[in-house]
Every structure is written in structure tokens, then in C-alpha cells.
Image (cartoon, rainbow, N blue to C red):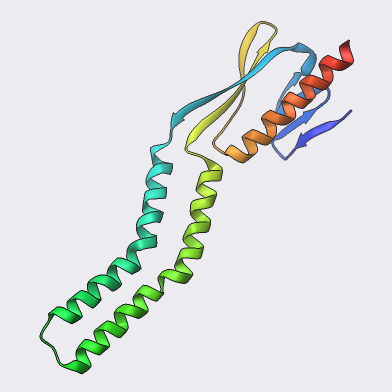
Length: 155
């Protein structure tokens, strides 16, 4: 038996696909297809919040500098406000690395439900549903390879 994909929840082998506690023998699958479900507005809003947090220190620094230059204050007060505003703007650097990493992972997880369907003994069955786009792609490709190998072996 060849294992094409294996994690703690899904296993794709040359004999079957197992998802959770369910098992579907490849010999019983007449066809496999995928669908993209509805968009998760929560994921989209999370990305927007990350983007806003990313530009927040830069906007605060720009506002601080413009206020420092527009008020009628002493030179020391103006220089102090400009310096503090620049430090706030520089905070965007280390923050950007963290936020961009989170943004990257949000795209890996995806904003849509991704579904794998199979025709099991003439009945369409939802085999897997996930938002993790990377995992979905790996499982779907593993299932395709397993089905191709099973077809070649039957000939």
C-alpha cells in the first residue's frame, strides 16, 4: 500500500481516503471533484485589520510631524515632537515583519471553504471541507495521484 498523504485527520493511500472516522475505498469512487464555497468575511476583515495595523505607526508618525511643524511651539518642543514621531514611525519596521507573516498565513488558510466531493456508489458525498488552501491542494493532488494509480492498476 502506498501512502500519498498523511496527517492526523486525513490519510490518502492507494486503497482508500480516510477523513476523520470515515473511510472511502478508491474502488468505490466513480469521480472526484472540488468546489469553492462561500467567502468568509471574517477572514477578509482580519486581513483588513492587519493592513490597518501595518500602516498605523506610519500614519501616527506623519500626524505627529505635521502637528509639530504646525503648532507655535519652541524649537526644543518641535524637535522633541518630530523625534518622538520618527520613533513611532520606526516602530513600523519590526511590526511589519510580524504582521506580514500573519498576513501570509491568512492567505494560506484562505477566505473560502474548499470542498472535495466524490461520487460514492452513485451518490455525491462531501469528503472533506477546509479553509486551509495549502492543505486542500496537497490532499486533492494526493487523491488524484491515488485515483490515477488505481486506474492504471485495474487495467
